[in-house]
Structures are given as C-alpha cells and as structure tokens.
Image 1 (cartoon, helix red, strand yellow):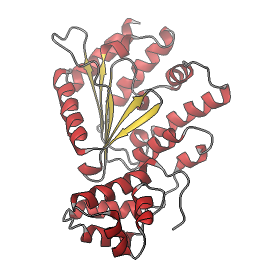
Image 2 (image 1 turned 90 degrees about the vertical axis):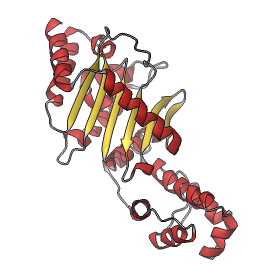
Image 3 (image 1 turned 180 degrees about the vertical axis):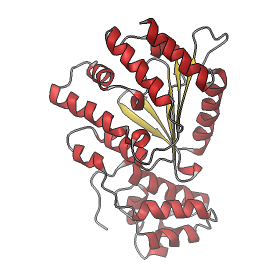
Length: 283
C-alpha cells in the first residue's frame, strides 16, 4: 500500500493498537517484518499509520502476537478494511485536521459522553451559540473559515439527531447554563434546545447545580467516545495547541470512573430537564 503523507487519527489508532499487541507479545519490529516478508521500516510505518495494512495481514499479525481477544481482532479488521469517505471529507484542506478526525471518530462511535463546566457541549449547541464560541479567539479567524467551522459543528449533530442516533449522555454544570454567550433571546433559545433534545429516549442530560456541597471536580471536562470494543474507546480533550486523543487503557479506565462520579453527583434527568426549563423561563 502507498505511504500516507498525513494519516488520520483513526489510521494512527489502528497502527498503535497493532504496536501494543506486538509489544505485549514481547516481539521486535523485525520479527513482525519477517512474518510479513517485509522489513522493519514497513512495520514501523504500519504502526505509525503512515502505511495501511490489509485485513489478511492484520489477522496474521494478531495470530502471531497470540492475541485471543476475538472481538478486538474483528474490530481492528473492520478498521483495516474501512474505506469510508464521510461527509467531513468536504472540509479537508479547509479546516484543521483535528476537526475531521473528531468527525470520523464520532461517525464510528457506539455511544458518547460529554462533561462540561463552562460551555454547552458542542453537540447540543445552537448555531448562534456555536458561532459566538468559535468566533471568540485571538487572533480572529477569517469570516469564511468561521462559517465553515460553524457548519461543520452543526453537521456533527447527525450522530444524535440523524436517522441512526447513538446513545448520548451529557453532564453540564449550572455555570455553563447561566453564562450568556449571547443576548437573552439567544440564551433562552439555547436552553430550550437542550430541553427539547433531552426528551429523546437516546439522550440523557444531567445538571450539576451550584449549591452542591463539597464539589471539587470542575476540572473534569471531557468527551468520551465509545468504540466498537472498550479497548478502542477514546477520550477527547482540548489541548493548548489543538485536540488531544487519549487511548491508553489506564487513562480510559480513569475517565470512565470520573464520568460515573460526575453522573452520581448530578441531578436526575427529569429534575435536570425541569432545572434547565426553569432557567430558560427566568431569562
């Protein structure tokens, strides 16, 4: 397969999972190369995502690595053979690659968790709210790119508003609900939108109120995206110079625990819906 100049995050993830399997088996890259009849440079390229791997080769490697996790092997084989060119491809070369990587990750997600304390989660934002959030940066981005970013964010909602939505759960702090990113009318529309969405069977919204005693978890913002199998889950967090995709098993376990803690201290979904509806009526 030809070498890729800029692999996607999904392609890099496939390579990193193969590297984890090889290292768990205690094998060197040259030993894997000997099995495939190639050189260690080719194996390195596969593991970094800059070269693809066929499903047949992937299964040979998994067997050589003594991997007995059938579900993981099947999920990796599906990744290796996937040739999806989704709606996000129209933005390639127009938006940062992290935007496209997130869209591709969401497209393959089995469920989605959001925790936010200062902003409404992206998938719940109205167009007006998104435009103000995305436009509030220094230096300012050109208007044409801002509109592309807004349109991209609105299209991402297909995973919870499209014909085949996935389970979605959000935990939002009261601070995010009360901060007026726009005027009163825009703020009211944003809250009403969350209430409407929360009535769907596959969407759960919970609120952490200001008056909760002993709350020290305000640094727990996250996006947790469920993969085909738990080992392929991903946590997405904003980093100083872009978006960080976290996939180590230890960290995934920690974030799963953290999300459950945020759920445990938040209001039940029905009370949360009433809470948000009341805030909207107060505006």
